[in-house]
Image 1 (cartoon, rainbow, N blue to C red):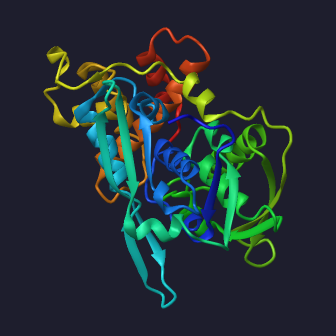
Image 2: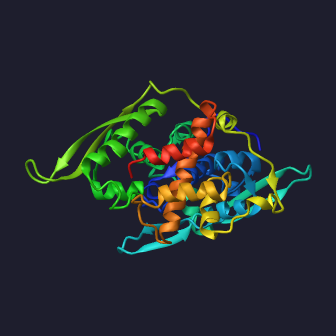
Image 3: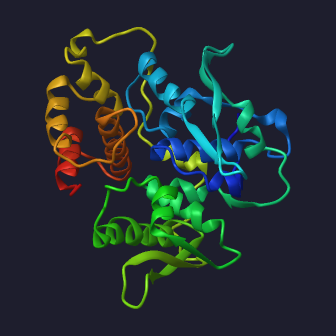
Length: 342
């Protein structure tokens, strides 16, 4: 499939207001790319096909084995959204229902993904209460917080402002209550970081003011002021984004490199978050650093929280590696984790 420039995303407000469900930056970015590939007025476009190497780069997977690819696509297929009903209840369903990895007639690997039937009304045949943005806005952002903040505010660009409680903003961003509990930490790590990133890399920028309970009381919410931004770096196309990523390695259909097989299953699981790039000894070092950090709770346990954390740091490593030569990727990643104050 040829990669088109200026891919437009049409996103329903109700889909944008769904509370986040522990999606990584790569998964949120992939969903944005999926939405840019479909035609919201044509249900027959629900199935999207990528060259596997493009998918590998989009998801920043590094070394790729089929069993690891399965864990990545299974994670995508397992993403559940909870949509509020008018009676106060909710309806839960998955975003995607099927993923197929296959070779075409020229022996090239491809990946095909199809939306879940229950999710189709959120993606197709809507005529009102939606907003649009061009895909390039999502490609330079470096964290899930930044990408979600862009979408949360882009929805209200025409209005020019948006009031939101701190609790609701955390839910929309997918930030757990125990993460960044102190206001100053939340301000620096989330608000200020997003403000700088959006002004550098997207078509909107924002300022905000605090909403307090009573005069000089506790900060309970924020009012954002959203305006057009013409000072962004440049409009990065999907094709250019893919070209900037490290070269994808060959797909390993059979288990190879037996000497790299792990004895510790937990370390092997966490190694997948780092593209299976590091040895068991190196993963033990990384695990010892991650284990002492206070990470947001995950419904499937602390190991999944650690997996998502490592995946995010590994993605940041790949971003830096695309900009300059890194002598030791392991040492660089180790230093990144040590410098993180979580």
